[in-house]
Length: 324
Image 1 (cartoon, rainbow, N blue to C red):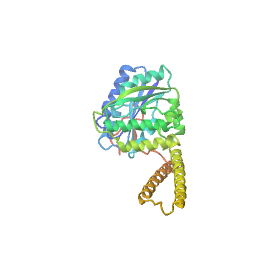
Image 2 (cartoon, one colour; image 1 turned 120 degrees about the vertical axis):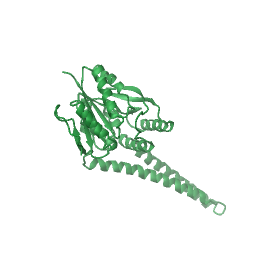
Image 3 (cartoon, rainbow, N blue to C red; image 1 turned 30 degrees about the horizontal axis):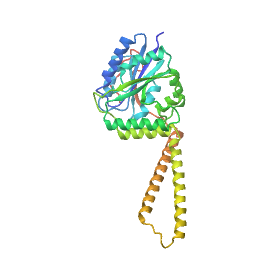
Image 4 (cartoon, rainbow, N blue to C red; image 1 turned 180 degrees about the horizontal axis):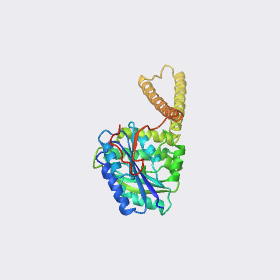
């Protein structure tokens, strides 16, 4: 029997890309991977630019091959793991809809999985043509994360890759709302093969990522990946408290010895106050992040609410254009 490869594609406002990407992937399988069955599954984050209507057309045109999940609202990064867990196949490939991750890498991923026996084939960015400022912050992000994580962090890995069904079921067992996918892969993945690629420049549409989303992702990754952050703040608090006590003790002794001769201006006091205040806010912020994560993990909830599924029906069952 032919093995089945699932393709999971999260998308949001990608009307200019979804049709071309779908047809590109179909062409790759028809020409280079004829010995495999495949299912292309889109998961849409409540797009408003006509993406959903195009996905319906694709589902009708490629019945039994293309299907789609429409989310109730925009769940951002939570949408991708949800689509991943609902994809069928002996393995599943996650790829973005914006062509920044090359679909041409799919045959090499399948080869490493099926022929060489790797359970995970992770695509890692060797470089990109994005703005220098964004590239700098992204590089800094990977550097800090690799330093602070308590396990081997996969540099340049964003989730693009192929995953064996065995790993998918492991992910299903332990996944919750605050799980960071790339952290989970680095921590629990085994027999990982990395394939590098050059991140392409988006030709259609605009990127949904900026410095703020990168910072949010950094905080989630840090608090999910290790306890180093909170330990650093605890250590800083201890060291600064020790220095403050020693400084206060030295000043008290000197003041007793040179009572009339020794004076101190207000500036050092103000600087010290603001410095310690900043440290306290930083520590409280880190504690708050861990408390939020703990609350989210202990509160049972459905992570993603779906509005509709299309293409999961019988092969010859054509679907309606009504997605309401």
